[in-house]
Length: 433
Ligand SMILES: Cc1cc2nc3c(=O)[nH]c(=O)nc-3n(C[C@H](O)[C@H](O)[C@H](O)COP(=O)(O)O)c2cc1C
Image (cartoon, rainbow, N blue to C red; front, side, top):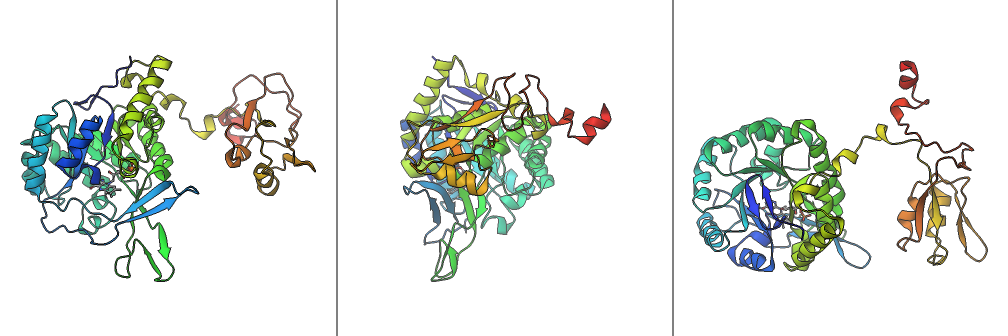
């Protein structure tokens, strides 16, 4: 049986599935139920020192839906916890006492001054919590007060605050990064320099999900006005995966543990983050959409897949996709594929034809009886037909064997690997010869 247990930056957990800092981890009642459901750990909803934090008493979420009204993206304008610090600390202590095998990490956001960290860290340490996560990511509200993303967007601040934290606590320190930045490697490097034990990402992305056209105001609308919020859920997963991979691939941070966050809904999503370098994963929107029990499918799906493939531990798969995560210039330009339509599966909707004919390479023909066929002489295997086809596996990409002739170019498909760095069309490569 695959072993799902992890030791993430010194924090032990029976499985890699943690609930991210957010409403699901805002109070003892939730966290106890989450642990009963099987979650391996939680990052407690962000605590601060300011007792005046108050949330809006109106809609704080906006959403983007798929055609079946499945929630694809969630936007929120919620701040850090507005429950008293003392209440949270007592609850954390009580939960940790009763669930010693689970990871309890406490998210923190206090002013960017050392006295504030010196004040809050001993209080957290006293609860017996396993570690702290520094919330340098919240993109709304708190950033207007010089915290959250306002710190996370300045690598020098990240380094300075991380150093303060490491000097003032023995607990492992995870730095949570904002995606609202051009190059995520820089804040990760800064966290590493400051002594962080790990980074976690992504926090939410600046967003306006919709505009109310009667009020002419962004939604969610509070008494006629709206503010940008933070976007999360399945829609942000591709952005998060890339950012995790960027940090995993960067030699400066190659050994820095990563907790992957962003749109994780199924075991497969989690496995993808792990393959790109995550040693643990965190979930928020999926739990808010479907409830705590989704962790059942995550645990059983991941262990079943690991058993089938012979992967013995999470460590054994962490970062396994990194060596294959390449720059464009290292892709094999001698590789040739062609689209193939399975006529038994085709429902003759014509989406592939419309897409290819109007916007791509005119490589799909339509007969009078609406039979669609690929024209190999035109197909560049761009994959658009696969992407727009509503039937899974109806259109596939078939690799052409070396030695066969590509009817589009008239050239024999070569076995050798040739990337851009050695390609004859690359003037730099030719000059170097
Ligand atoms: C309503 C809401 C409140 C959140 N509050 C916090 C917070 O207090 N601290 C924090 O670090 N992240 C907070 N987040 C961000 C999540 O922890 C997580 O990084 C983000 O939602 C991406 O994960 P997901 O796609 O699984 O939701 C919040 C997210 C939501 C939706």
